Image (cartoon, rainbow, N blue to C red; front, side, top):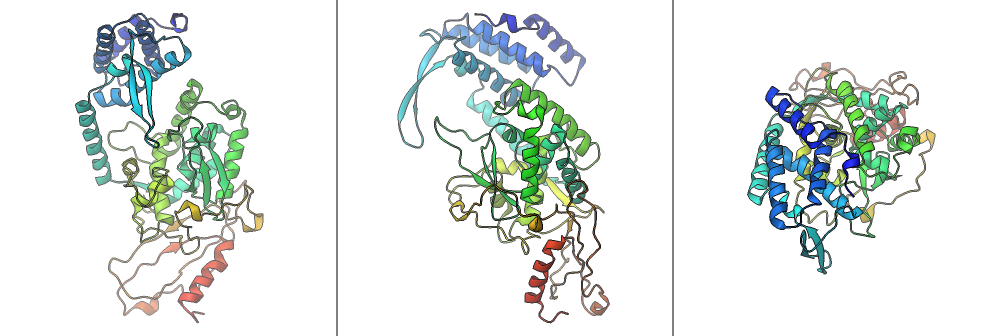
Length: 475
């Protein structure tokens, strides 16, 4: 049966609008709806063809049509995957029947077991794609663009980012909670909606996560879990996730595939909010070659903050981040560095004065992370931490290293305590004055710059233990 009853626009109408916008130089050539309609018309036409030559000619003509308005990289990354997915959907639902004339057998070997198998594949899946040389060229251009962004890191004010994300975590708006969860965990909000499982661990800033969206699994297999860092205490993030899932707009999407049209509508609404909250306010700059700040860009900022707060100084930040983004799950120590992780090193952190925050692992003294070996991680039941042990959201961490190494005693120059509240997370308690706040006795030493670390009252005793070990008799 034809899909014609699903069409809002004829193919001729869509193409006429498309070419008119190209002629006018409009930024948007096809809306998402128009593109999907165009692809459905293609699939509908495909049902009538029964020879490889006819199918190849149709695929070649469709790619040429798309190239009238889009660069090859966009077509390869966006349009062709959409077309191929709709073809596969039509085959799986039986609306596009495979015959000896329109398909052929493909032999494959299962990577893990070496088991051989065969699949019947439509010729359109052979022809609706670029050749290897074109894909190699596109990858080269993408690498050059990514290298350029890494050579020009964009500044993000750490405090403003954390303040905004923490405020959003207390919202009852599904868009704001989705943004907060992505900003503070580095996970895709669609993973939280559909299949992500989050569990508290023994560490206050770690959640155990299972349900990675891009992890391809065979039938009956389960994606392996791994730990993710949270930029505020994990129990507060878990409360936000649970609240997010109870919202009426999200409850009806439980278990829905991330490619479902309803998810795409939500994505559009969320990206609009991200732009207003982070781009228009000047918190996150637009990267070169990008048109706007989308929710996906928050993963890069999250990565920069996770490295700054928790990456051991002895560990390379790429190895550290690829683990917590879930880019390398199997044979962690033997696997090569993930290429995907390199696309998340586009930002540098600055303080409120615009000065770069140097260093990494600035919170490790108080919150040393467990080993990255998953066999050594002991999970605890999924229950909130006792209220007395709950740690409020990180309010500010600023650190400036000396220009040249100098031999000085470790000194804590200022401690500030802030109370955690579900309704007023940023309300301050009285400051805890630290010893030796004066630098007058350093007149004969090379000038040094102090670091500022604001922590919470429940961390105060831990810091004093560290200071007692490093500087006996400091009082």
